[in-house]
Length: 351
Image (cartoon, rainbow, N blue to C red; front, side, top):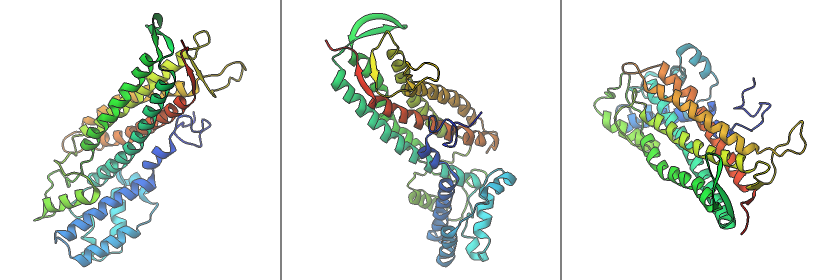
């Protein structure tokens, strides 16, 4: 079966989100790892652990770095940072080499890069959510007073207006937007723990150095979280809520558009290879599928909480497998949601 999370799939962009995918691709992630290394080197120089000259020489090497060998390093080491650090130091003298990565560890680099990637993803997603809420507001203005049969357990219940149903779509999305700030705050914490999470280097300026790195990266400084993955799982939970609320909209629309019910009319729609009369609610269906996928992945992501001792390779890798895919699926659901709402031509019936 082809991989649907790629634009080269036979499914095109039906279930993928190139913009979100690009936040986790090799160039973007490498750039963010380099941002951490540059901030670390700058901090080592600022606190006097290395000379200004050595720091500047190291920063020039970091700025000039260009390599496609990090994947081969991961094949060997289980992650790209040893290859990256080795390459950065390879042409530096001893003093300048000491200004690269000294006191940091691979997990500091990758976790910081992942945080920066996820914060950028959240910026894009909240912008999309804003547009979807605005689209729903427009539907309420156009069709809110139209009559609609309320349905409970998929059976006709009592007459109502379109406002009842569209408000039920809108409210959770507004709540998720409000929660986004707290998720961002919890997420935006730099990872600086060193080899075993003690944050004990460089001496004697440990806290000053860590604080400087956080400042440069625009993050806050808190306790080491090598083995506490709460903030990552909290982000996954937020993605699950967003995708799930979009899935509810998709499920409602797919039911409302059924022939014989006709509670909603959409422009566009998908054709059938066998039945020319059909106009399938493709975007609504994809929102349902993506919501169910993200919910399933959150169960896997939750298992990344189980880190053995001070650091885990297996639980950590589980995050790499799961979180980017959850983000891309949620991003795709947001795209479908925005376009679905824009395609609505009618909801309910005028009095």
